[in-house]
Amino acid sequence: MKSLIIIFNFLAALQFVTAQTPEMSSTNEGFNLTIQVTNIESNQGEVYIGLYDSEGNWLKENMKGTVAEIKNLKCSTVLENIPAGTYAISIYHDQNSNKDLDTGWFGIPSEPYACSRGAKGRFGPPKWKDAVFEVKDNKTIEIKF
Image (cartoon, rainbow, N blue to C red; front, side, top):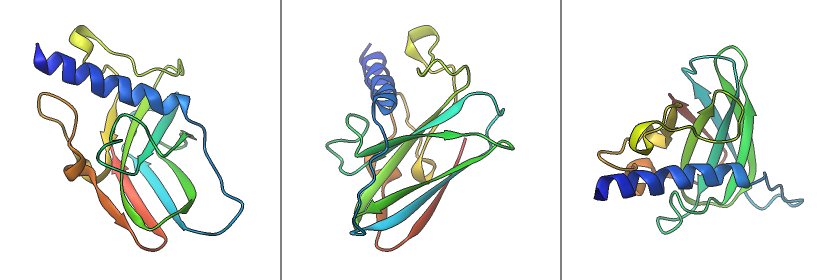
């Protein structure tokens, strides 16, 4: 039962990505973070991307969120003005464009999802320490489904 609650919380956090809109600063105070998503199953739908800036916010409240269009089974987006620091990314493929991460039995996702550094959860969501990376200059992160 505890693992179901953890999975539910993880799914709720991924849903939160849809509520966020991209934020662009008018000043150049940070770096560009390019996110390339590959190994997408189809060109249908969109990919929702959430950038998290702390372990406390991980899968609860993203710092920035965006939606990327899929072309040729991949997509790419640039988040601008990201301050130097420690971050993690979670994504999901909204295959049917309903703006939700669809789930099946016991709240298990029926649409693909992934995290930075290939982080995987075991009986629950991936851990911050497994998904975290540093931004010190312009950076490109590749995430594979």
